[in-house]
Length: 123
Picture 1 (tube, rainbow, N blue to C red):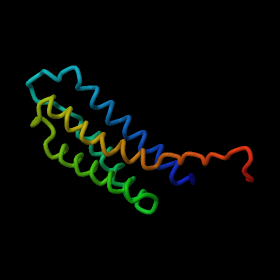
Picture 2 (cartoon, rainbow, N blue to C red):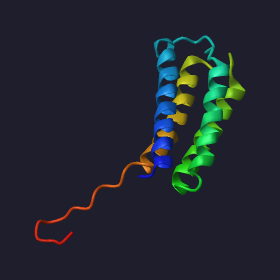
Picture 3 (cartoon, helix red, strand yellow):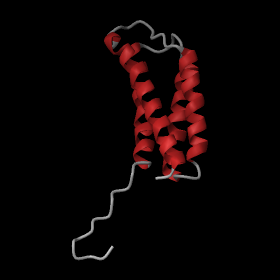
Picture 4 (cartoon, rainbow, N blue to C red):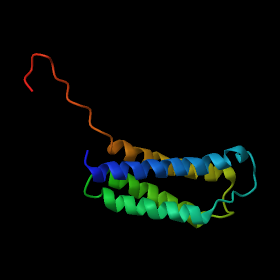
């Protein structure tokens, strides 16, 4: 794995962790019918990073690039509905819909499994 791919994986892991933290911050209010008030500034920053990572992934992995495009679109949709339009339950589901393709993009950039060599094979 080259350094560009490693850097991208680290950034995507950070993004996934950040979206999970946002999702967990509203988890205690899932049965609350009141609107969910997310920090739109934080979501805007995370969306900017998603878009940057998508461009960075373009030459490395087509599948990762596509998954990041899906995550970006879903984040844009969430931002258009924030703040105060969604209930906590719907907002939680929207964040889960962002996390799914984001996790897939990280998986696309995983290290390949090392080739197994038998003791009698030459190196």
